[in-house]
Length: 398
Image 1 (cartoon, rainbow, N blue to C red):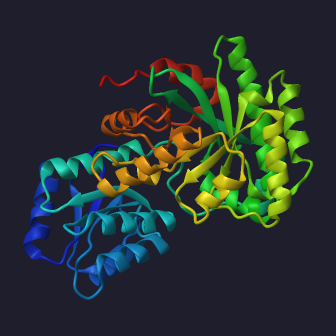
Image 2 (cartoon, rainbow, N blue to C red; image 1 turned 135 degrees about the vertical axis):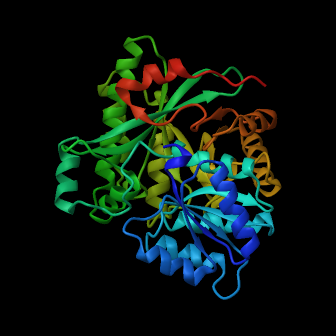
Image 3 (tube, rainbow, N blue to C red; image 1 turned 90 degrees about the vertical axis):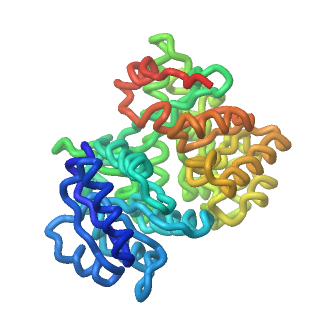
C-alpha cells in the first residue's frame, strides 16, 4: 500500500503542531487525513468512522485525556489498524507506551520524536506497508471453536517458516516453524487469534506435535534438495506437564529420519509451570535425548534468571521488543548487551528476533550475537516457498 492510499488521523492538542503534521502528510502524498484536537475528540471521531483508519498519530502530552489513555482505548475498542506515538518525552516512556499498545494487540509502527519532519514521518509510515499482506487485517476471531478444532485435526493449521542466519557469514542455518491456519476459503488466520483458543480448549499440546511433525516433514524434504537446516518449534507450557512428551517428540522426529539434534524446542520465558517438578523433568529428558532448548522472548517475563539456572537451555532468544531500534535507543541497547553478556557466560547460543533494519543488524553483529531472525532476512513463508526466500536473502554489507 502506498502512502497516498493511507487514511490517517492526527491527534494533537497544539493547533500549530497539528497543522504542521497535516502539511507534512500532504507533502508525502497522503490524501485522507482527519484531525483530533485532543484525546476525547479523537475518540469520538474514530467511533464515527465506518471502518478503522489505517494509522493514528497520537501525541502523548495532551490536557484532559492524555495520549497514553487515548491509545489504550483505541486498542481496546479496535478503533485503528496501527498507531504512531509522537512525543518529545523520555524515550523510556515512549517504549513503555509502545509495549502497552502491543500488549493490547494493536500494531505499533514506532515512535516519532518532535519536532516532526517529512523524513521522520515517511520512515515510520513506510513500515505500514511492510507489515501488511500476510494475513487479514481483522482483529476479531471470525470462527467457532469447533471449526478451529476440526481445522487442527484436518491439518489446516500448518507451519510457515522464518529463516535464521548467522551473523558471522550470513548463512541460513535454521528456520522457526510458526503456526498459520490456512482455512478452506483461502484465508489465513493469525496465531494470535487462534492459539489462545486452542490453549483454552486444551489443544495446545496437540498443536505443538502438529507443528513438530509437519516441520520435520519439510526438514526432510529440504535435506533431500541439499538444504541442511535446523528446525525450531514452539512448545506449549501445557505440554511440559505430560511426562510422556519427551518420548513422543523423539518418536516424531525419528519417524522422519531425523535426529533430536536437528530440532530446537522453544519455551516461552514468561510461561509459568503449574507443576515445576514434572516440567523440569520433561525438559531434562528432552535435553538428554539431544534436543536443543531455547528460552524464548527472553527479558519479557519475571523469572528469567531463575529459569536459566534451573533449565538446561542451549539457546537464548532476545525478544524483538528489545532488538528493534536498539541502535538508536540506549535503554534497549543496554538490555541487548546484558542479555548477550549473560548468554556468553552461560555458553548459550544467541538469537535476536525482530531484526528489521541494517542498523540493528550492524549493532548486533558488533555486540557478538550469533544468529539473526526478522523481516530484514525474510518473513515467514509456507514450506514450498522457503528455498526461494533463502535464495533472495543477501547479507547486509557492513
